[in-house]
Image (cartoon, rainbow over all chains, first blue to last red; front, side, top):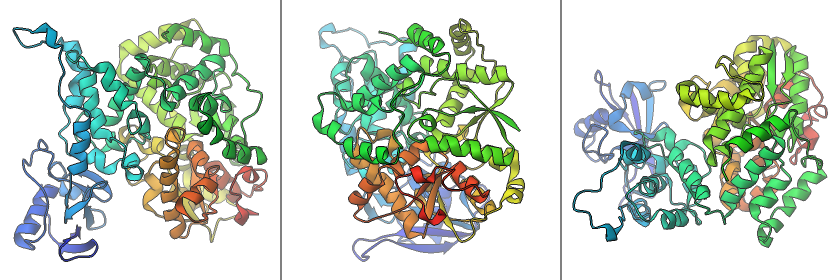
Length: 313
Length: 286
């Protein structure tokens, strides 16, 4: 089998390159086993991170055939395609050497969401603050994150916008925002509703796909969006977009694509509204604009009834 | 072959050529379609950002409409398809949710039994109809054309709900392109996000994303892109002049809907397939 591994030593190399190692995979070996054996028997200069070998520490995440995963949790034979596997360092982070990347910005973004509980100090309890099982379940999934950064590595939004907090931080934020013992739900939700927060996720699902635990960041981000709307933190394009979208379906059973962008931008957001003009004109010129007269679906009244029954507020 | 057609909002709005080309393609392939005109919007993953049960209820109602017709659902929008698969999964794994939703549907005379199959046109063509049979129907081979597939997130993620065999390395669109006589173009961006879901919130991010993928496709020699999701089309086609400005070069890359590409190979005229409605007109098909 050929292990094609990306190499880069900033002291010697001008740019990363691939080096092929021929290696027979021992029976039942994980990808990490193979990487270790290559390092120990073929090339001691090959550098990668590892520690627990049990998918708990989150150290050994690498890109394999273009998608990030934990090397210790992956059977090597499963990722071999046509006798070959391509291993690269994680994305969205600078390379330090070979497969080792710089987690600096990643940790800085985790710190930014204040990853600690802020309890009500006036309570001064004599024992630990207990949680009901139902309350714990709200934060259980988010708590399983092992900070491996697999989600961060494959995040499409981060790829084009380094200002985005990223899936790991937002999943971690959910764990505190939905914690029954935390007293900063409102201010925390406000902060992650700003630029670079929950509404700057493009919803591609890569994060949950790569997550090796139950943390599944996209699900956490979606639940934070629900919380933000429920708490009335709606003075932003993302939340307005949701409200306008749901209102439209509640009205006619079908999306009114003419009204949606205008309501999403906000009626007082002049520059935002102006930005819609070029594409609007472009589409009208090709008669690609949605019909001016918005027709409801058949049986729209039944859909209205469902919305009235289930929509709160 | 007969299916309950779910058009989705975009095929009746900003991408009406998707609807018309689907009808023409289906006629040509003898696929009979029964349009669900009383089905509501799938919610596009947005309704669930306000209220999950509401989103599941609206979709369960659509499933019930198809079940009453005794037909499986044909989606022509990747996003609608992904959202429906998610709703189906939530409803089938949670009996309490299923009961709650059916209580809501009851007043309208509907009941979702969990029987209907939800399919995307892509899978219907590749699996139900079959590539061999499509090959027989090709009258105007796409030979000489390099075509870049753009899958769209909702067709491939989450992988456990995807209909594709290997959602991290899918070949369905490539296989279809080959069956139509064309040459599929392989590029990294084909499985990435088009950026459309947040183009309102972060236009520069969304268009940079789109530009990156389209540039890769162009560099690999693509003559056009084909997508099974009209939301991807909306970011990649109408915004392309703005994408050009962001990446600093003119792409001029036509973005075809899946049934348009199939329709061309079946000998249907480009104008009939609505190719003139695109912002980036597909001159190669004149």
